[in-house]
Amino acid sequence: MRIRDVCFVADRAMFSQDNLETLDASGYRYIVAAKLKTLKTRVQEQILDGENYAPCLMGNDFTWIAEFEHEGKRLITSYKSKRAMNDAKERQNILTKIEKTIGQKGSTKKLISNSGIKKYTSSDHSITYLDGNKIQLDAMWDGLHGVITNDPNITAQEAIAKYSRLWIIEQAFRINKHNLQMRPIFHWTPRRIEAHIAICYMSFAMLKHMEYKVALTQKISINNMVELLIGVQSSILKHTKTGDLYKLPGSMKNEARKIYKTFGLKRSQKPEIYLPL
Image (cartoon, rainbow, N blue to C red):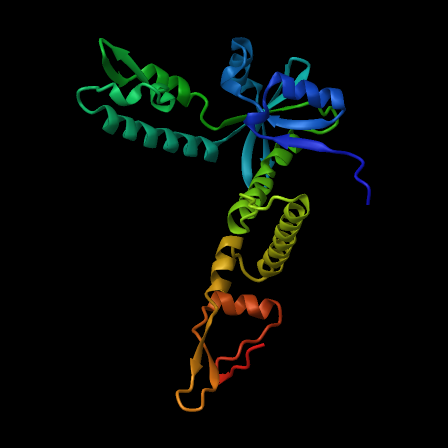
């Protein structure tokens, strides 16, 4: 089947004028996360004005959505109370670490290159302290998220829903890189490099198929599924007199047994003669 249309979905790292202009010139549609705090003051004031938002239900989440014009593009922002609570929790964790870092004397030695700490602190006569105004300004953005899109045909709700699925792609990269060790590549010739990537991709496709099949009866992440299957092992015992080899199956967790059952596989729990290939 031929792909006729492409829509790029990307995180904040892609939010630059050059990137967006390149995508526009190529005729591609895109949905890119916006750096809301770097936008012009007028736009920020509109984003923070609750009167501009309308409620809607996205899945099981109650969401407030607003849309603005930004440099000829659509700027769509959303607010979720669950996201706001997570933002507040993460900030409090950072503030707790800052208090431990600066100590009672307000030491600045560890703050020279730490922008994450400077975000919430100020200094006076070489003494560093938590700045309540900075903390309050940051808290105003709790729960807010925005995307920029050049697609005039989708609704604001559809744009947010498409972006919310970006985690699936990010998960795929993590699985390929860490679980399947696609990178780093230690091959040198193009043929071997392509073969390595092809094997990793086929393995990933099989893992996703397994995840889909298993999810029909139980919810297990790919990481846990791989660990469970690795744990399914047997010991090889050798008879001291005859030299015969016997396979002794080890214990098997219930979750692993359910995975076997999903694919119609049976595993004997009894010792049997082992005949090496």
